[in-house]
Length: 196
Image 1 (cartoon, helix red, strand yellow):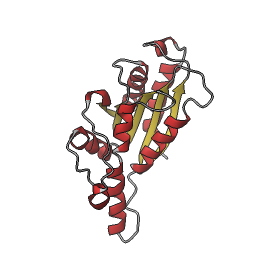
Image 2: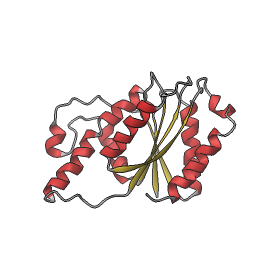
Image 3: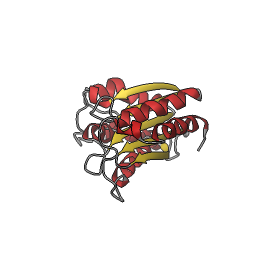
Image 4: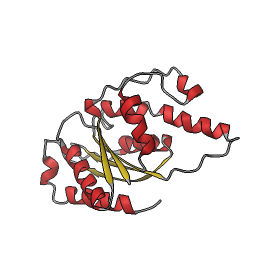
């Protein structure tokens, strides 16, 4: 089963990269076939709010969303997103990708309309969030969790859960955490075997 890992950090080899690597190791150990998207390496334009996708279900912009991201979002039964916390939210690079999920959402809505209001068959997609933040704020991950939940909702995917670690800032700090990477591996294994 294809499992898509979306690396949302601008920092190569940073803490959430390591978390997602470990998660995908666990997923592969349970039969998952990992595919990786590094958002920092993609050319993704911001949503124009032009409403063209409202009519067609496709985005008119020509960038890496159309050629590299949309096909994988449609194919992958399992999607895991990783992002550090920037000002109590996800990274700007990842937010660009999520904002552009309006097109697949509208594609689904248009298919529903064509079917006379009946929902198309569920694709049984599931999604998971990995995150790390520098502070220990009580509500540190709330905005990121809500944003990613709505991203998965737009894809008609169930939110399967998250792993979020506080007080992780310096590069490789996650390696010094006593359990984080093993928790990520275990979550990856479970993610591939658990059903909704």
